[in-house]
Image (spheres, rainbow, N blue to C red):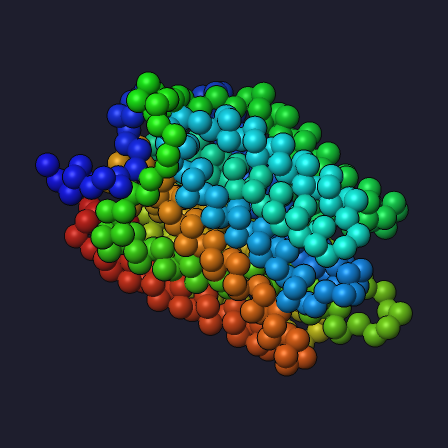
Length: 427
């Protein structure tokens, strides 16, 4: 009996659930699940990656709250989105994807609708940070947990398509918010987002068909356990640390790029495209998610993740050289979106490569998300505190850029750790 069988804290295994062994790797039903996952990402990470427009709005309409206090709204939202994964991941392995998706969809709608009535900081915090964050956490891992149930050879590509949902959501949500805000005010802008989430997710529930359903053994379980032996796996530990620094650094440009562009505008000057920088950034990441996912199928997800990490580190540090709020910042937003896209599309595929048993794929994703949650909670507020303390953006830029460099070093160590564990150089 090996250590995985002996350890009482072992998570759900593939034998606990009813899961067919043969994967279709295509077909209408399989691609409909990709569409469902796309929309779940649209309404989870798409919302989270749109927070920059709210950051800029709340700074002028919640004058009693500091810059870093407002950043806590988005940080707590991202924190819960990721932290809930440690509970949601094993439940996905147990076959409860539909129930989780339904709960998340309801919470996201209620959160945005409640935010439309908010006039104080604490009200926004409860509605947008806690309610929307918990809802997004319920749908995020089900979105990527669907793919391994239907795809094998095309898994990386299918996952890449799913994760582009966050890019499209990151374009749609800011544009809808800014458009309705200009015409009808914040109340209806928030309600518009609530109805966008509800309408798109209605299609999700209509086509969602998980192949893995709760087995009899899982029906009797009510608790969720971590797969602690994973923390003795060197590759998993290196990957978890790398993703911690990714999440710690990734959100700073999304939160503060619009403010950076507006800092170059004089009072009364037209803000131009500054209000749409978050949408431009997310539009750039659409190709940045699909292309690395396609490459991962040919060269291995760990190899491609290393290349993406190097590129995003260089691009993020180039933010320091951008000295205008016009063409330069637009170009940076598009380049950062493209370069960082793979940091969202590749992780689930990398975990599927590292995990010894796909029956605990969701559990491992949840464990990585738990680590990432604390990075997302601390990164943007620290950046906001640096901005307030220094009165300039250099601290924010260095925090994000150097964090990406550290991530790259750990991804390189992960690649080295895979030597001898894969056939040839593909990893």
